[in-house]
Image 1: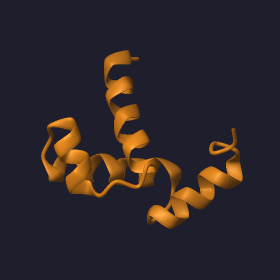
Image 2: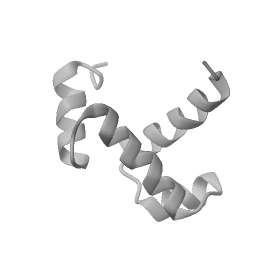
Image 3: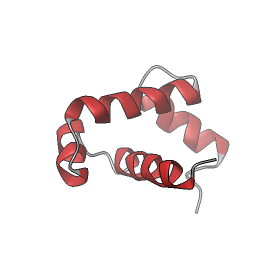
Image 4: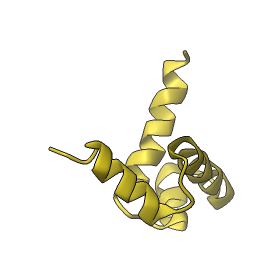
Length: 67
């Protein structure tokens, strides 16, 4: 497994969890908004959800969001 790629994807996931908009994430990470959208789409696909609310619900229900 390429740990560098995992770390990069983790940055996107954390930014997404912080509820930044796609453009804000793109600016913060020096990427295009399209790249950010692709990463978010991949996250939704891996979680088997169709949007942010469903992803947040799944994360909460699975314990990912617990302290």
